[in-house]
Image (cartoon, one colour):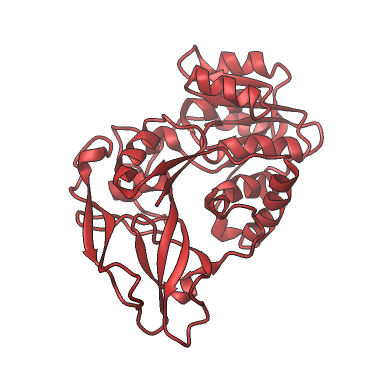
Length: 342
């Protein structure tokens, strides 16, 4: 350890079990703890940024069957994707002081991480914060499941979220003729069109989704990238053209429901339409496509540098504001990804 390091550091803990409803600011505590010292195989990382992501709602709710992450209990420190700088480690560590790395122990100022669980940033992306983008899920869905083709009409649900705000841009770059999004805010709808190039936006709460989608895509849709499920998935099935390819990457309609615990999103769909139209309906998991992350980073970096794509995100300054940032993300107040900056 070096003299420049502090003796304590702050972290965000789940302060109380949530019996019902959605997490809010009062369910969390920002506490000081002694700064840990790395042991064999470990490094100490000074976190610079971490991602506020919807999956925390599921982990806090405890419905984690099939989820490759553990539930969060009262007193646990929250976690998630982070980028930071190695500040201490054993002399024989493969990582050196000053290395910038990505890891999964966000929500704390300093993280004690196994060196094997750190990914040194390779410079493929022009800004280290861009490594926190969940865009690889959208990219994998579009290239591995939906196989976007020239001239396709693509519908992206939750288009103003961290995944959706990139999915629409990528669909266009991959050859889509028309890209339609959905959101719950007129202001976000305007930004989707003016900033991200969406052709049309279906507005949740402005009338039946199916009717709006039929107007936005009178020819029907070829591809769905779905982060929401619920009514929007049903509407997409009604609009599907022959051989449509649907890729599900989220289920926010259930995950962010105050009536659920974050791990279910039941929806009634027309199975008859699935086989009559020859629709493929598949869920995307990054674990099933380990080659996607590197491919995505390389293409994302090229697109960012050329200006062909943007990374919509908001930066929230200070760990003290992190619990509020989570509540605001759940309430849908932000456009794109939500990142806490330390």
